[in-house]
Amino acid sequence: MDHKAWWEIICCNKEYEKAEELGVFIHPEIERNVIAGNGTVALEILEDLPDVDTVIVPYGGGALTSGIGTVMKALKPNVKVITSEVDTSPQVYECRKAGKAVSCRYTANFCDGIGGRGCLPPVWAVASKVIDDTIVCTTREIADAIKLLAESNRIVAEGAGASSVASALSSKLSGKIACVITGGNIDTSKLLQALAGEIPT
View 1 (cartoon, rainbow, N blue to C red):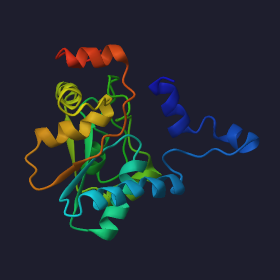
View 2: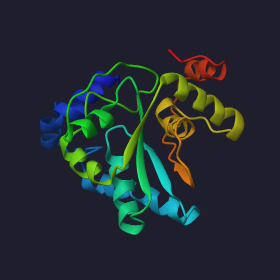
View 3: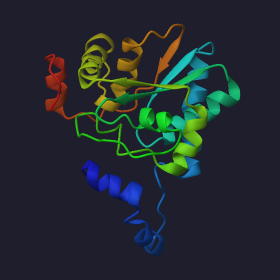
């Protein structure tokens, strides 16, 4: 499914009425149980790195950030929760600047698991309370992070997943940092481009 079709289902609820008639639609971003389930990632981070200072989470639709951030702030309020974004769609940056959920520019690229045309208002109502900052990366920085993860750690990450590592490398954060790497669904040709030092197209 391309990004436009996904966004229409997620944002505009084109299929929601049909789902209500024919079955149960579990929204991947707005459903509270999904957000709560995502919060278990924070528990895993605290189990492995109890003295973590910062958690960087790629921001797609916001449910993962909301879940991790809510649990982290409840258990260790001093831990910073930072989102990672790509500069072709800095939705969290724009919403934080406006102080509310707003639309933003979107340019399609290989980091299709993050970014969008804006933050969903119901999710932003939760996410905005737990996000301490956002780091906006270039596609070059994210491509370099994909390469680094593959070569140094033997981790195959998609652009969205590698954005947290790109954010950590491009920032002046100090202390113990946990980067949430959210997915490995990268097309082989895009992975090969990143490994060759190119920006995937």
